[in-house]
Length: 215
Length: 215
Image 1 (cartoon, helix red, strand yellow):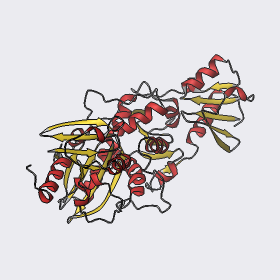
Image 2 (spheres, each protein chain N blue to C red):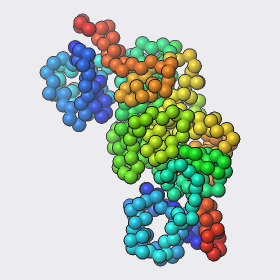
Image 3 (cartoon, rainbow over the protein chains, first blue to last red):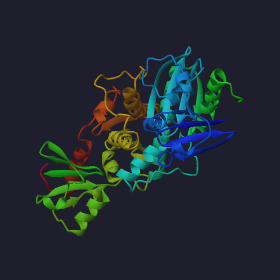
């Protein structure tokens, strides 16, 4: 069973435990012939799948029901919080989303620019300021003392600080972290649960509930 | 007396209490004939002033001495913390810099992407996600419940959270805020001091100490 999570910058696949990403600029859904269960926040690609009537692409979004006031909540964020009762869910990808679920209800959330977005923004606007990760992990109690650390830990520390603040406002909620930069962020929260394949795990649940498929 | 603070995205002038900004893409130092005291973090413009031997542009950076391990600290950040003994200084411009001064020594700092940088990054990478400020000021205890607030308060709240955390680690330090978005940020810190013209005030101090000029 092939699963695909189509984002703004890349399409993320999972097939029998093997996962890979393809940049959306190089990704063409018409090149695939097998059955693929997918979600997409990428309007262009969603439209292409619909307009080209690609029957092998099966959109799972219709099966996802979330209680929330937040009308425009992206389908990836809905899937990430699926079936959770009390949790703060961080998905640290090309955007970093933070969603708060209390008593099985989504009560709000944030969208932050992700690492690649910030990196590109430095490249375009202030190319002499290099955004790159220092090999040595900085203790967040240490203050950055050079430009490279000031930029990288500026980016990282503000995300960590916001999560800490939300966590202190919602002490009973579990912290669940996923996404490409999720591992790095989770290291600063020993109590957190890092779920590399949270989205795919939940897509599999949806399929189990709605299709006759071997998982 | 004309003062000028040349940044990466704009040159900021002050002349007899009147201040204005010119985008660096439209700014040409050769167009000015009067004497202008300046600092610049913009390498291209600094080189132009030097190579074209523009004698009316007087670089004040040589007069700025700051105790710090941070060798590449930008001249604007050095000027912002000039003569301070114990302070956290935020300059919220096209980048947001945070600098910590303790016992008259700069002990570290952060560089965060500023509002315009984030805004441009959304425009380029995810144009359907609009970055704009909601007219109604959100209480930071409220959780954003739509995409516009999730993006704008995601940007703002993570800066506020980081500053709060630094402030709680350095309780004795005064919080001094400047820069185009400084007023907005200072509203979340009632104990802070908002100094719209901090850089220019300090440039004036440097001139007083080193030149025979009427202030």
